[in-house]
Length: 293
Image 1 (cartoon, helix red, strand yellow):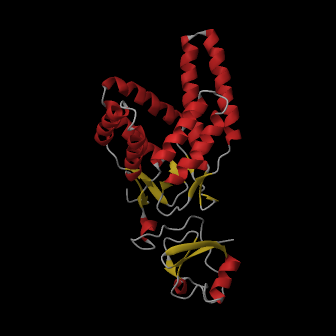
Image 2 (image 1 turned 60 degrees about the vertical axis):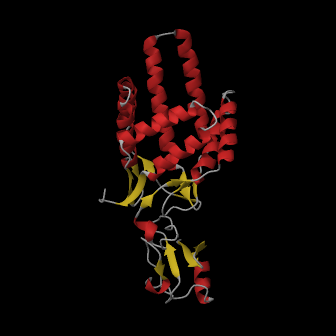
Image 3 (image 1 turned 90 degrees about the vertical axis):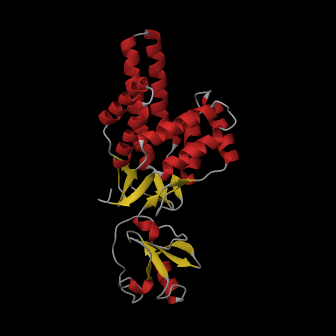
């Protein structure tokens, strides 16, 4: 059953189940000139422009999605794309990060702390057309992976084989790949799953990480590898009507990385540096109509 939104005094109202939305129309709350939106529409439209909506017939059947953001630029502007943004308070970031770091030293709480932290940071990311972003994953999903890896690492530590140590490194990369797939699959907007998936292969992910590790010896080459890997990462996210495009260059990443390293060595500026870096990466990540990239 479709959910509907309508605009009132510049603010988004909803979601409303179809039956309740019909009542709003009958009560005159939603009129012919009211801007409305339902799943799958490219942007906000006047109610009178939606076939069958005001006449009492069946509304159009269209695929799922989330409402376009409503801002100063107009109701439908975000539907065609735009850059991501990140917004969080420095104090909140600082105390949450300290709790995560200190708690992780005890090993056992790591899955729960990671999910707790992710549930906080994800809504800080503002995505055009996807209001109220959230993370719905459960820590219990991570428990077998995490503690299985810990047991394996301890066992290999007793063996002391270089070959097995290299194998452990590969296993760790595979676990990060599984973590990425799990996180993306558990993103939601307005409480509704986005239906996203990460389709990059595990072999490609391993290859990118090995290439990045090798590029470190070039001193500066890692930045260009990082930019290329981010573009691959964005292309590998499916389930959205728009393409996710990373536009930052290796040079952009390099000089920001150097500045971040220098400032972070002073300890105090770390929260501000982290927010600055996150904001830049978000601003370079855009949603674009498919085929336009």
